Length: 310
Image (cartoon, rainbow, N blue to C red; front, side, top):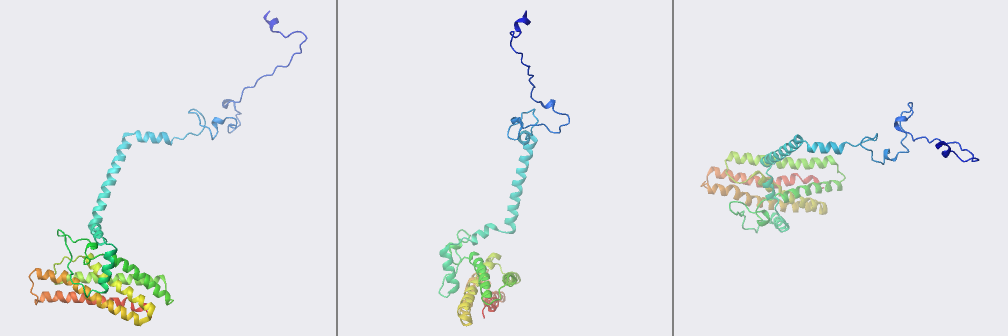
């Protein structure tokens, strides 16, 4: 009865039944196929996000990072590493300040435009300057920008660099420029400066001079001669050897007077404070030392520049 009710009406043509084929599943793939066909599955492509149990590639970096940060041992290791880095930084800063006094170097570069202008004028024309004493504030010398008599490293450093550039210019105008020759010029100037400092320190030790003159002070005072050397070479390039000898001679006399009046307060004044007789043998040695240091400046100024002017 039910079969009759479901049967097609009489006279109606019977259509062939179509069997629906289910979509291909990964488990029903061809056993001889090496890779699955994922072109019809957008969720398994490169643009989609694979499900946790899918076959797509998963990125475990986020989970690993979270696990690493959540690990107590990792946190302890990071804290210990940060502590070691801080201790290492303190140790390096301490040793650098021990061998290279960075805080003291800051004092020698505490200059301004007014100080530089006045100091250059003093180096070129020191004859009218009266007060050569270095000013102190609570047993500490004031910064160079407040005292024209205080030594600085800004002018010597800039003068040395300018001297090398001017030497290169002079060699270029004579068709003698080469990097090796310019490097030899710079190394020769540095070698002479180092030799001067070592010789003065050794002389002060042999003469047993108790002075507050430091090594950095010596470098500053000895570096002022580059100012006159620059002027002599530049004038020599413009006006020839006559201009070179005139300007260099003036600068040599000026630096001699400057060094005498400056070092006299550093070396001889300390002897007077110690009660050493002016006519004593030890005081005479100190005077000779001061004269020798001052006289060496003009000689080196000529030696380092005479071959640059022709």
